[in-house]
Length: 198
Image (cartoon, rainbow, N blue to C red; front, top):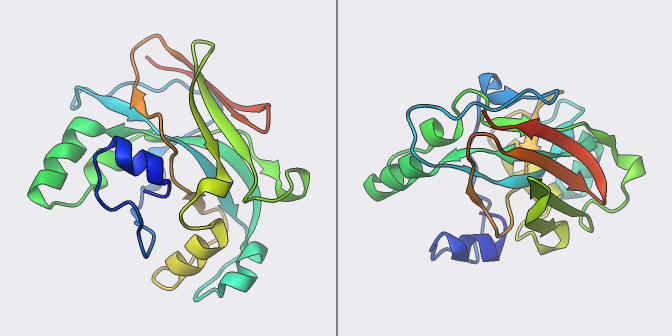
């Protein structure tokens, strides 16, 4: 919930959040190298959520925001797949989200780009194409919580380790995926993510 317009599209009343909303995915959620995503049989609606993903490069705890930029070295485009029907049910009952967010292969990542090649992390454009049509666009300047502030916040609770991946929130435009679709993610015009839905 790091983009106000996305919060509105999900009928969320928490448009201006004081603190980031955090959840975790296990390592079994990771899907990479262009491998296909298989829609799980426990959900009737799985939505794509395109996000900028930051790779942690140093061990860190209680990181001050002004030093957070030292703790990541590369970025990519990723998909936070969400079993929306399960999420809606969990939300209505006040239950945790892990099962609708952390299932196998629900965290898709593309190829990483070194930070020095992309410029200001808070001024990056990214988008998702499905079957050649742009379905979602984002600009990191629109984040409610900047990348460095999210890192500082998370590290006050959990030690960040080398190789951890931080998904930074999705902009407006999420929607369901279907078998046979071809998804491609772009950062500043460079294709970093490319896979099919099965």
